[in-house]
Length: 296
Image 1 (cartoon, rainbow, N blue to C red):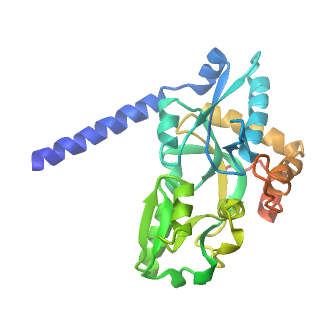
Image 2 (cartoon, rainbow, N blue to C red):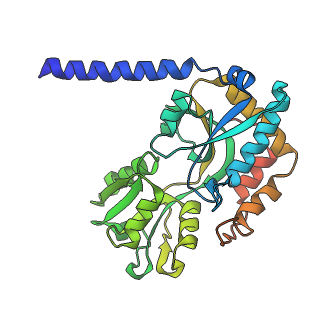
Image 3 (cartoon, helix red, strand yellow):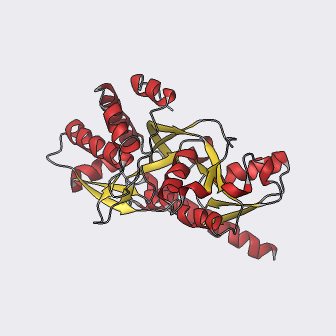
């Protein structure tokens, strides 16, 4: 048994080493120059990234990345820079970065210490708190109200660790149910199979608005986490590319167009969705885009 365990640990370490080496061997800037193509990861996460009925990839993060690509083309002196959109999930995004299937994820990834161990982030483009959604009829407003019940989370998100930490520290006796997609986690609430679904508040608000009966759901009064930044996700230790992306974002922020871009996705009807979120830009984000020089 001891030999078997040692073999298994050795195998895992070998796989990790090969994966890490493959990631570090990718020079994104060189590949952009050679291929003229930026591989952009996207998800099913309106209003940040999603597809409309015609299969077009769009969203707040996508439009921002389109502007980043234009800036990168100019900064790198490329004759052209096309975008290839690649669908990714919360569970495979880091793997796809490391394998080179995508160069940058343009979605809604939380920039925190846990995730920075496996990937690098751009300057922030949004700020969120984690809350939970439940059926309004159950009157679950705080984490304590959920004690002894089940909570769904999307596998591969930082919310898994956040809800587990709250569960331990507050002795809530929660049953945490990881599933593959955000929609699957939300559907468990709809079907009454879990008491709540924990996720970034803006994404929960969007999913509630898109549901068949938005009045059936309630967003928790209590925030599970303090406000946290979202950023564009890139390969670990690809510092030259990260620096160019941040240079592009600083230029975009300093041009003063972010308010209009924000309003298109958070205060006007979402293309292909038929809903309007009516979420004004937070003071935190407004201050940040005015002073984009600090690093995360």
